[in-house]
Image 1 (cartoon, rainbow, N blue to C red):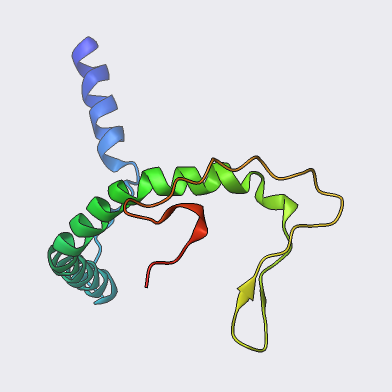
Image 2: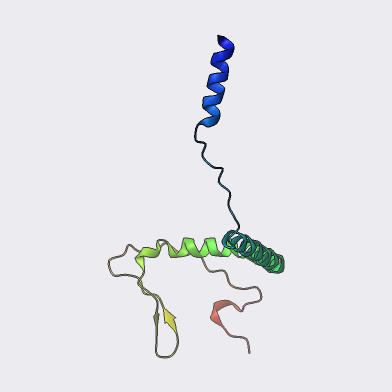
Amino acid sequence: MKQGLTILLLVLALQAPVPAVAQSEPDGKAEGLSLMERGMKLLFDELMKDMEPALGEMAEAMKELEPMARELARMIGDVRNYDAPEQLPNGDIIIRRKPGAPPPPSLPEATPPEGAVPDGQIEL
């Protein structure tokens, strides 16, 4: 009896409709996209290889500028206290402080350069 039931279930299972396995035929789009991806990767790899020395030099320059940029940021204070830059007819660019803005941060004491003549005299 068990054997008959097993055979019956096997026959019914084999006669049941089975969904076809999806077979994707290459229509060119997937292959083209893959080629485009590989081409872009090669392009960007070469670009990064070419740019790497320049980026290293830029990082070095930024490290050197960091103390000066921090000092400038300390001197300026909050950037929202200033109007947009204006270019004057003579080519100068000025950045005005907004009216009603709090007073600017105090500036550090000016130190005269080495070898400067005291009392504002000019050596000729």
